[in-house]
Every structure is written in C-alpha cells, then in structure tokens.
Image (cartoon, rainbow, N blue to C red; front, side, top):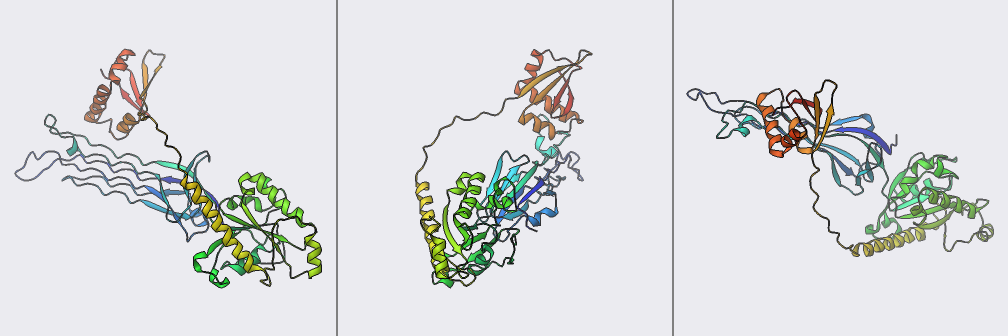
Length: 430
C-alpha cells in the first residue's frame, strides 16, 4: 500500500561503559589501572534511495534502534563501537520533528544522507584517570545514552513532469503510453489511488536518451480538493516537487475553460507557488470527436497555446513530449542563473556556549535544593556513577573549577542541601 507520511521513533545506540580494572599478573603485584574505554553507540542515518517509491516498507516498525557500544575491558581493551543503522527512504523524503514545526532534513537527491540522532559517547576506563598524584583511580565513566527522537517522514515525489487534471481525463492512459509506468486503467473515476512514476525514453520519440525525464501521474483533483475533498488533496503536495506540469483536459467536456480554472484554483488555494509552475495544456480524447466538433470546442477556450492529443491512439504525443523537453531545459537555465547570483556573506559573532543556570528551591524544613543545568555538567553527571566516592569527588572538582562552588556559597548553600543535576540528587559538600 502506498504510504507518503509516517511517524516513527529513532533511538541511537548507548555508549559502552568504561572498565574499572587493575593489571594482575605473576611477579607484577601492582600493575596499575588498565581498564579500557567503552565503544561509542551507533548513529541512525537516513539515506535517499531512488529504488524506493513510498514509505510503506518502513511502516512495519514503529521504533528503530541502532546498536549500543560494547563496554571496555581489562588490559586497556577498547569496547567495539556500535554499528550505525542506515534507513533507506525514497528520494524526496522530508524529515520533520514530532510536531512538524522544524525540518530536520530534505533528502531530495539520490544518496543524500543525514544523521538524525547520534550515538552516545563511550565511557572512559580507569586507566584514563591515572595521574602522578592519583595512581590508582577506582572509578570509570558510564556510557552516554544515545539520542532519541520522534520524527515524521513525509514524501514528496521528485519528478520532472507532473500530470494534473480532473478525474477521467486520461492521465493514467497517457503515462502508460509515454513511459514505462503501468497504472490501473478503467472507465470510472479515481482508478489512480496513489501517484505513479515512470521514465520517458526519448529514443522512442527519435531523440537522445540524454533527454529522458521522469513523469508522475498525480491522482485526479476535484473542486474543493485543497480543503480535503476527494482523493487528490492527499497528493497535492507531490506536485510541488515537479518542475513542469502537463494539464490534461477532456476535450469532450461541456465546459473546457471551467475545468481548467477549477484545477488552477485548487493549486493556488493549496500553495500559491504551485499555480505559478509552467503548464503545458493538452486537450485529450480528440479521437472521439470529428474535425468540425473539435473546431466548435476550441471556440469556447482562450488558451494562448495548447496541444490536441489522443493518449489512446497516440496522436499528437510527439510534439507534446518535445515541448516538455524545451520547458525542462528552460527551467534548468533559470535555476542556473539564480545560482550564479551569490548572496553577500553575513558575518556573525562567535556564539558562546549556553551559560550554566542555577535555581534555588527552598523546602519547608529549611533545606534547599539547587537545580543546576548546563550542557557539560549534565553530560558529566550522566557519565559518572555518583554512588562511587571517587566519581562523586570528580563532580565536586568540576564545580570548583567552573566557579559554581563559589556561586553556591554566595547563595548560602550548606551541608544538608542537595544539588539536582540532570534529574540526579547529589549531596552538597563544601
């Protein structure tokens, strides 16, 4: 089943714990600390793959986890790093945060990738903390937890040409004739329940394979589609990725001009930029009418240019296809010109790290809790076993070095008070 939007949870691997170990060998009674570091946790990477056309294969799982790092071992043996988890998505996939308020990645080209969540850093073994003064450190770091996030994947198909129009105008027939796509075709509305992609081989039309292009058949739109009516409203977003549109209109319609205006109004209501896209108008099903009837129909329209075609009998298709090539090349040249205009560089001052915040929460018994928040100290507490005396001493040492201890004294912190750092309670010590 076609799926163009998916909500999943991604969890990077945790870092492995550092090892607390001492060398113990015959004739070497005091070999010293030899605990190795833990391995880093695996990242989760999204990669655009042209062989995929929808997000359906990813819908089988709600949570994707990367491999954890392996803990370090004695003899200074480093734990193995966790393997990265590579998730392949269709080209044109946009990655949002949980509430869709921020774009995390736009994977709009083949093999483009983005690391969505990073694995946790492996903890250091006790061999790392040995100094001339402190030769036998009896603590090691714990591994840092990997990042986790709820993300929304939204697919916008990437195609050169998009076929738009009311239901039953012959879009499915046209794409099946000009490309390698094999859509469902029947004599009733809404046979196309999901977009179809096809490659147009220009050698069949007497041109070079260098001019090949991708065409997308967008499900039929109806009046009110931009407000949620019919099936086409689900797929309006896919049109935004196309470079040129073929607006297919049934020439046997009672009001050709109105059919044209209905579709363009829906495009404009959904996104004003869609209505500005280059459109090639093709009046289809000319095989049903004779020449006199066609002449009468053409009197009721005021299009500047259009193509008369029959997707069924393949009449008039070659001029339409070559017009597509011209339009695509024209759009490409416009893009090149816009890229050559370089914006003036904006110089920004170096942004300093976010300062550590300190908040005092007083209790009824007179004791106080000091809530401390900061990137470095949060990470330090996460990767430290506070039940270990030496680990706890490491935190107190950081408080002294960072100037927090001085600030705590100014706020009249005393023994019996607690420090709350990253959700952990640590007894205050002068």
